Image 1 (cartoon, rainbow, N blue to C red):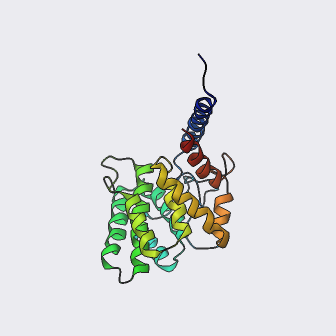
Image 2: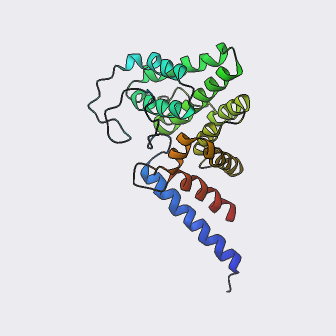
Image 3: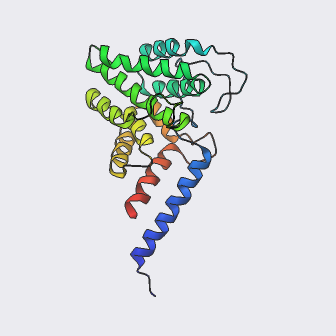
Length: 230
């Protein structure tokens, strides 16, 4: 039986996508297993040279909510928020009470924000934390964000803040497994915005999980291209 060339190309693209996703899964969940470049900006304390906790940390997780909120309030860079919430989630996994307190206090900020700028960031933080929790704490009773649609909150944040390529970058990572059309739109806007954002550009050219994978831009765009060819 002859196979049409277009069908063969679609099958090859789909196979490539499956291999690509398998490698990403082996490397770990992208919102957790990839540390973001924040330059000299302040974040939660970190002593590991890898993406994960080293096991030698002496950080007091009873301070997790207050320390995290102070960092988020002092710096409006979305990538700084992404890295801080990533670190917070790694600490939170060891302390369910701290995980719940952090989510509760960040969520409360959406109700007390007094400007679109502040409201956008609190919506983003709530949504992004929910998605990081989903990847690291699962969907069970250990995850206080179970049932929360993080992507919907991030979309609301983007609408409130207007054009923000760093938020689009975050949304592209959140939608790696779909929905396809939204993932592509987020990816395209993030890459376009990186031309005027050196910090975002550095993060897009960094390799996933240190040196064990494609660049972040390659991971985002290859997924989009393979899905469109199916």
